Image 1 (cartoon, rainbow, N blue to C red):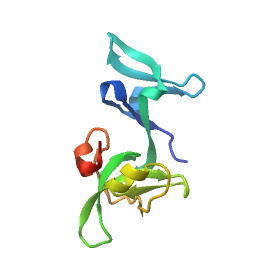
Image 2: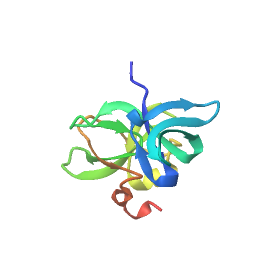
Image 3: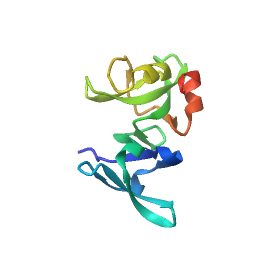
Length: 141
């Protein structure tokens, strides 16, 4: 069984919280319980709307790094020894994770309206869409 865990980007402070910093998600009260130094305290219950939640895919890259939604990976294009950046997304129509070019991600994120490659273990995580927007080229606002 795949472990259900996530990381979350806290938009007000432009800060990524790793899985071990997220204590709870309450869908009724729409809050996240997180461990983060802020205002002299270490634990906070914050509004879910202030976060972008990225779920763990259950896979690791070739270096053993866990792969999450929103990760930017370096992958080989069609076995031609040509490498390109692609973004990890969840395809709601096919119920699986895929990688898509940054331009497709920007235009159609989350709706499954793009074509992409299946996520492979030999890819390498090189960043994510929040901490490394420069890897997306000029499409990221």
